[in-house]
Image 1 (cartoon, rainbow, N blue to C red):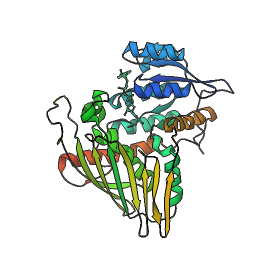
Image 2 (tube, rainbow, N blue to C red):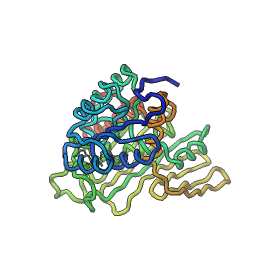
Image 3 (cartoon, protein in one colour):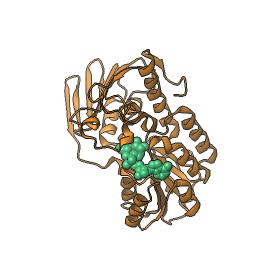
Image 4 (cartoon, rainbow, N blue to C red):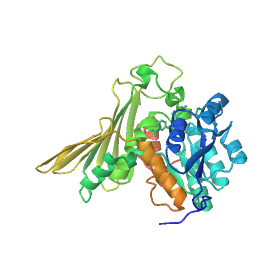
Length: 342
Ligand SMILES: NC(=O)c1ccc[n+]([C@@H]2O[C@H](COP(=O)([O-])OP(=O)(O)OC[C@H]3O[C@@H](n4cnc5c(N)ncnc54)[C@H](O)[C@@H]3O)[C@@H](O)[C@H]2O)c1
């Protein structure tokens, strides 16, 4: 495994900075405080009220930006939990300062930014990770072991939320310039799983519309989408996304000639059959963000890339798939993955 630079020396605590003190920044900060030998020493948010509130809970120093945080306090790693259109700037600031960096998904909203982060992280030799927490799920790991060596012919995936019905999310989630729309905000979790479980995706076709709440003009994101996709190994996939259903669903179902496996993240359940054998496994509630964070901290502490399951390079491949989908929404045609920057 490659050795990387890290400023963590001996057994002193790992010092973390958190940029973005909204729901995910708060979650990561509180999870850090539950890991022995880890302390959140500084937090940043453009909303100083949020920064001060989280800083108070963590006994940390509040700042108004990631750059100010990095200039003011010596940290070993920065967790970037700002909206996606800010990830590039904040992550580049951390890399420039030689710090390890965990960026929430998506790595960025465009390929140029994502690739520049890959190049900078490699050149600076810093530990880098992107927040695809589902990869760390015991459910995912069990599914991977069950399908190991099997030929997957089809994939069916689903993401549904109640955003347009409940308005229980930050407004920017449904504003394309900030989030990239539901393809990059929600669907990419299942496409990243599809890539992790089956392999690279080469072409995407997408159709989407505003069918449920078209009168909400301050939002420009689709509420209903369907996609078809093809893997490099020939398998075919379909995906359905809705931001206007009352019940939350995140699921991916894999098919072979004599087997079928449904990974149901919302109900924490694996269901299916392999030939004559029936599978039904219920999983206990596990904090997947904690597993993801623990892997990042282990790699920062050990100066090695052993535990992280999604780094900048891999997350950029998932982004390329989603951007092909986004181009297809506009062109109405199948779009190749990895061509174009948006
Ligand atoms: N993996 C998951 O399960 C999951 C879940 C939700 C969100 N996310 C991701 O986490 C990231 C943050 O999402 P969230 O739900 O916490 O959003 P949020 O709106 O709750 O929090 C974002 C925070 O960033 C602050 N901010 C905005 N611009 C800033 C800037 N330039 N500098 C400093 N602070 C700034 C905002 O004031 C806000 O407090 C996004 O990338 C999102 O896609 C991941």
